[in-house]
Length: 220
Image (cartoon, rainbow, N blue to C red; front, top):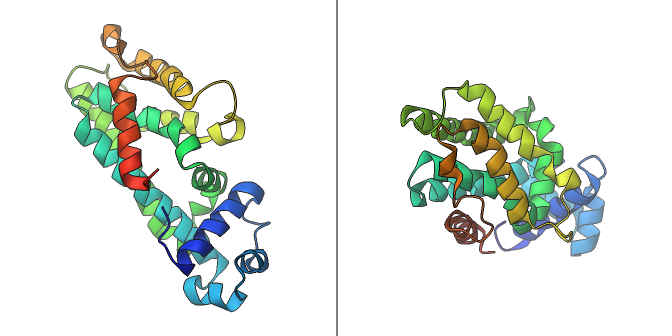
């Protein structure tokens, strides 16, 4: 979660506005008005709007990397680790909704902007972590041979647009969507489909580990 104090309040309000309106429609005047402070105070803490977006990206990816490390540490096999990461992709739509929507709708700005260099680095680190999990699964014989780079991008692509269609208040739970994503991805990767047993239950051990890992990182 964003740090406490005035800077944390600014970042949290900015994050909510970006999630609701998009980056271009978010401005310092509205943030200052809501928080009862001057635009100069925002500039003092963050400098420019680009730097505020960079802070959003960096704080978001810092949480995701910490959770991914916990998930990999707490689950014993590449199959279970990848299932955990897939569940996490969807659970973020509920547990860290505003930051997830803000990040995903503006992630294209990470592509080449100088201010976003650290966010780009952390996103690449996360992608490498997923690729390492895939490579370990292939090496152990759990996953069939595949192009790890392409497979990782397909996985990210399948989860990235969930903010546009997933409704946290809707009839389908995030865990149920996650279970379908696990079945879709692992169903095509596993050398023995029987390894899916126990991984697609919304209240199973993998989901419990993911929830706890997110809670340990976000305090949610």
